[in-house]
Length: 612
Image (tube, rainbow, N blue to C red; front, top):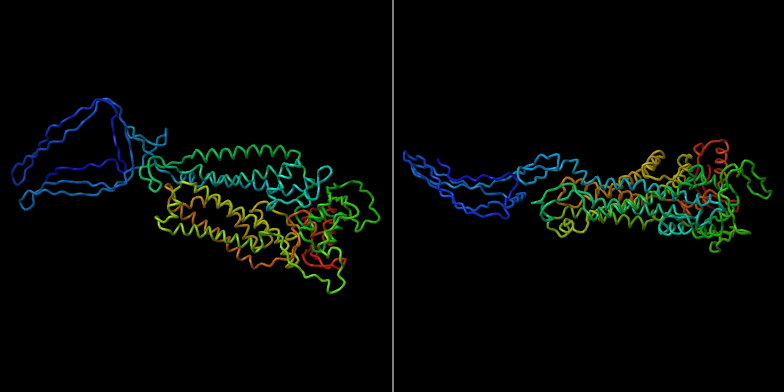
């Protein structure tokens, strides 16, 4: 048997094309090649004349290397004897090439094969994680402390206003709001009044929402070479940076650093005027011992939010610090208390008494006949807990889940698949922004639920102080989840746990759409986590529809609203005085506390928090 022609393949997985630019071109005619073979005892002479070829002397050698993904045919011609006859056999084989992974050098991360060919090494798992997940994850982690700083600054802003010389108006202290539309309006109004802390923290919060979407687009696994957006053939992959999003991210972070430095300067002499966290029912009851503050609120048996705003709009308030030698108590002072032993809120009402809106007859009318009994109303001041808000949020989550599921199950040629796979409109930015939006909305829902759950537990049955009046407002999901576990409130625990999981939504959602550098396993894991987290949120929202909430006339998240719930609480007031005068903190409160409807001294029914 004689082998006539054999194809020798190139380096597996690579095709190298060498060309010479410039130089002197010469035509070379190779000499004939003669070889002999013996077939059936006869000598056979074969002569092969190679084709002429051209070559260049001098010039510049250029080498281009590309990845070959197309199978190559290998043709082999064999001359042999079958049954005493000389026979020529031609075989065509399809060679499947295996890509070759080079060993990187210390110099440039690749290796050189002796020519100008540069071979990129494959990515390790650590490099893949660093490119696909780490930038967005770091951005989310940077945004978390900004959220805590902003929340704490806004929680203590009313007390800072009260502690200033001369105090503050009611709208800037007792009824200060930062929720809803007030999230944008109040910081601007505070800035115009010379209070820049809440304005700076609000800017920091808004900028922190851009970190995750920009990081998802800025740093990641990039392709190098000439290839289409649907095929990586002809390209190499490496961790890289996209210039435009990276510049935007750097600008946002530079502004945030400048704002943090400014915030440090503003907080240098920033005084809250209170030595403890007053955002609990017991803490507010301790501040509201002054009867001149509580008397107008006691007259409001079942106020609306507008009536409470109107009441505090007319007053001026300040923090009265404890004095070593308290002044004598006026003889006409009702319900005298040792108000000078602790920090209290001192009101300044316009004489002779605060004007009350005439729209509600229960403010000035006593119940004297059955015809005067108004029908009890049922009000929930938490907008995010209302049925319309929860329904809209549920529909949003279901829409996103449906979109992800449709994209996951659709064929590769579907319009949705081609649109999201095009990578031409910032798809990672969009999906990371959607994750940040869902996380923010869920955090607002969890915050409202945490406050309302305290009243619900006391309304259901009397609770110890640690589960009712001594519970403070938490500033992060982890501590809120721990507090819910200690209170054995499993619904609240599930919601706060979902809040913590929701923080990673920008990370996993940004990796759901396919890209040239993404693996199927990454897509499946991120897809499952995204759908699982949002599905859990939907389950908790729907399950919470059947929870019954007590009647709450005003919003306890404002200082004035919280004071209203404890203004007629004799038992709670005496208990907080006892523990503070005894040198104990509010954690030393004993007994149980309830929230319910009682009959006041004027014969009218009102909702109150008091000792059982």
